[in-house]
Image (cartoon, rainbow, N blue to C red; front, side, top):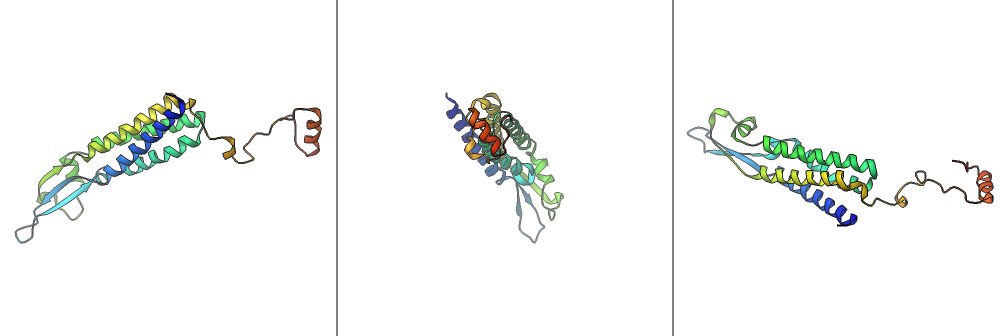
Length: 187
């Protein structure tokens, strides 16, 4: 596989992994059936992934920002982006796994719900999808660390004029012309 295809693959993996993570974090990961007494109907209270694991959205957004950072950086900067993206993926998986179960859902019920009135707690599989999204983001980060230094970067046309290194003068006349303009031809 050539370098451009690898870069495209990693960009697609990051986009898909971040989108899946953000989508799954907004879905209900569990529900509690609350008995409100004899005169009131039974109420179902849903708890989303963002309630159970508040960092999921932030990690998904960081992974999404990693796409832009990946394309814009070079060499060591790209390795730092890869390490950050890998850490985001591991964090998403860890949050998805630890944010599941009936005890976690009971602990994150809204303030108006008394834990003694909860008659049953159910969980969904959205946490699995969030974990898969995190795994995809982690794989993308690992690929960046492994192969990222070989990929193409933005050209110098995208840099500010001050960041571009001037070409050194090639002839004696060019050296004197540079001195006349106030430039240092030895730098």
